[in-house]
Length: 218
Image (cartoon, rainbow, N blue to C red; front, side, top):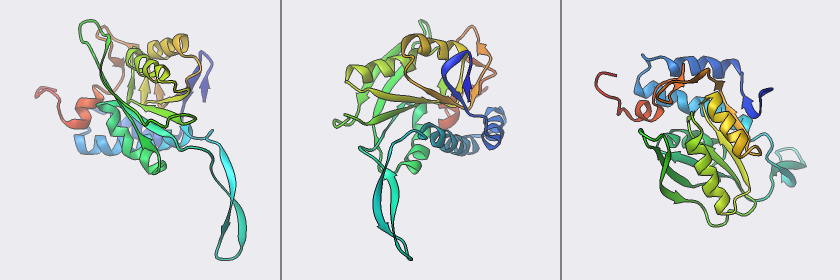
């Protein structure tokens, strides 16, 4: 469903997705279940985000007869997680597109300036005509996503989508202002950012919950 206020945003309202997201948000959900839910949620988001992929007809033979069957046309997509939390979404996207190539973009947020700091970039060389799916569980201020898109654009990547589990209005607006042509696929448009630029109601720090690096008091 495209949100009227944000024409770049596709908010997926599937009942199973919303149920799994509620479990993911719960502070009592442990690391093992959290990882499983991220995988399952990403599967559903990935199906929605890949609806537009072009098809071509090819001849195959079923056990009963020959037929013209649809297969993906052109070059296969590229999955690009933003390190490190985006890695939790790769297996599900690869399950949907097992032949897709995987790139990596390393970015982290400076906790004082909230700016995205770049430290790693690696994508397939034969990127022409490929569609890149950026994966990051959280779209908060939008700084990291904008920087990732900027780096892809600087490498002449034209077709880009962003797949995230939850998004804040501030981040969606920033992408709309900067890269309005890039669609965002998410399970929830949350209420707002807090003073520390964390999403409310949110689900905490996705990377810490995925990899068990929460503070002992958390």
